[in-house]
Amino acid sequence: MITYDHISIPEATQIQLEMREKIVLKPFEKRIRTIAGADISFNKFSNTVFAGIVVLSYPEMELLSYSLVEMETIFPYVSGYLAFREVPSLLRAWEQLPEKPDVLVLDGQGITHPRKMGIASHFGVLENQPTIGCAKSMMFGKFDDLGLEKNSSSAIFGKGELLGYALRTKNAVKPIYISPGNLITVEESLEVIRDCVGKYRIPEPTRVAHDMVNLFRTGKLETGYHLHERIQETLF
Image 1: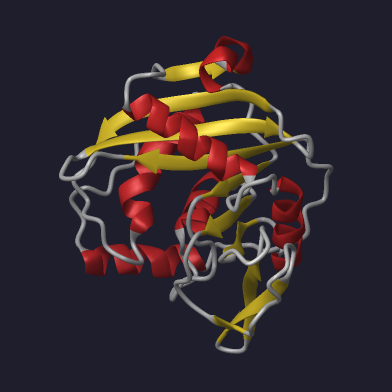
Image 2: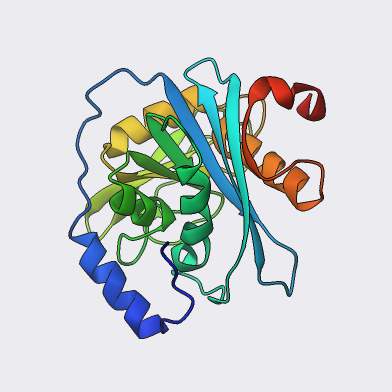
């Protein structure tokens, strides 16, 4: 099992620089049938991480299954190094999924990161998995103003390179920030996330994952892998 608890920030930086060379951004060549969302939750001043991955049908956004784990981490919360705190627990949740989704959306950055190694890129390289970063705030890059209406988007550039898109998912609401993590293109990442937007600002994969891990953290759901039928009454 991967753990980063005892590495320093300079060592983490070197890992990112090495992993960056393994990112592959290429067109997704098959039909997407399932899409997953990943998120974590934790109590302040605690080393316990509650991690979850939910699997949804695509493009229907119907919840199919979920995987939840609880584990400890002592890697600190440091901007630009989120993956080192969160990825180990998400990998354990991932391992519990009997069938892997076609695409995984993570709550954080993909290549819109100073070293192109946001959590979506980190996870995608480790698992050779198509991933998309969907962040609630900007970390790296610049974009022009976008319209106030829903579905308005603006390209995010960093050092002259197209890295992602800002996308407004509701009228006059702050946009979200989308970038590929691995094995999918910038343009496809935007297209996929647009298909995942429901009535909330946050797209369904990461929104549902967020809700699930908070239910888990507060004792309303149990650890392990479960099918949707077992949790329908709890969630809805």
